Image (tube, rainbow, N blue to C red; front, side, top):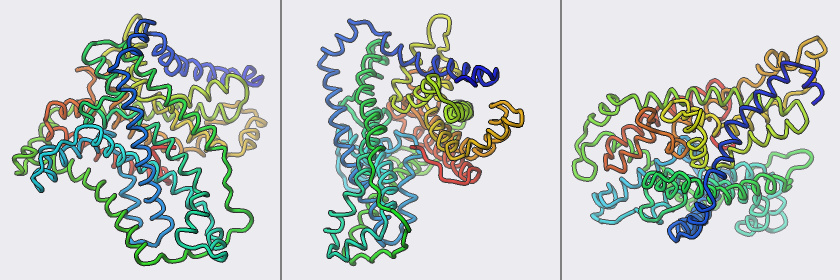
Length: 535
């Protein structure tokens, strides 16, 4: 750190980054822990209602993680290790939920499979309710299995065909080859996927608030605590309870699974053509992928149809009423776009600068910046929202009802995504480039802006796109911060669904989808690489 003190510009950048992370990441986290009094903790921990919500959260986490990981594995295996047709189609369909509002699956399934559902009632005449644990299980499985599939797919592709070819030469084939070679070698992908999915399921707010009904989980209980009783302290206690397993799982996934070594390629890689599957296996894998793809496509068809029919469940005539009403109330959608652009820009710029400082320096301050930049990845959205509601809505810093509090929460909730992207990029750039500039008289920040920053332009664009899409589709982060003055589209959609205005909710969701996919397409064009919501 000696060179930091010798360079005033570099010292100032370290100071600014450290102070900002302390104020907008560490302080809200500490306030969530210390704002409640001891009596608040004792009350919540003794209340049967919240103990039940804790148990429900753990049960649904296990169920959804197992089902989503299992579906993700079979789906990824079908794409990588079989010769089924329409692989590209299945691949594209499977990643659609990653760029959509997190509550969309539950909302669409509520319209399709609810008591007045298009499929259950209007097609089959069944008056069944999808509300409850079974509906939540289905929604979270479909919403998060793409995360498992993407993680497992990367590991399956890394398994050299020569390993499986050697297994065939030794007499293994079919299921024996899968059980003895493919499955053991894919263990890190399966374990990592399961842990990541469990974090997302545990922290999920959008799907439970839409479809869980009386099956309360911790995320919805925290919201009900504030909405029903105005008890922010009680909500903080619940979010702490939610945080504990989330952090444990996050640390386990980050520091254990990623350190396991499953090397399958050494020396020269031989390109061996994969053996064709038998017809019945190909048919089974194809039908499986077709069913899963259909379940995803149904989500989007339900939303689009809901936006253009007069009365869901009783009047199926087409109308533009809901679209026009959403446009008339366009300030909520406009707020979402403006806030997301601001948060995406700020998050991308901040995270890239922080990544550069960490990648090019050493010392305790560098470790602190690294920790604070990664920390938001382990925090559930409602934890961030409650932390900002406690920290920035009282005393000398009262941002209640302002755009600033929403933008700040979105910005620092997404910092870890851009930070990890930037860190990976800077680690691939030789330090000799910056050292050459320093030898020619430039300071470290000049070397960053003029030499290294242009080399990570695509990483900056990727960080912006990811932050923008996550910001415009988030509900959990802003649900505790939104008021009549700073409402955003996702908050309004939640209220529309709760009030039974499915047409308006579907129309507003459709606009969010269009904006998200347009930004994604532009971002991929500019960045020149795949942009992923999850690193």
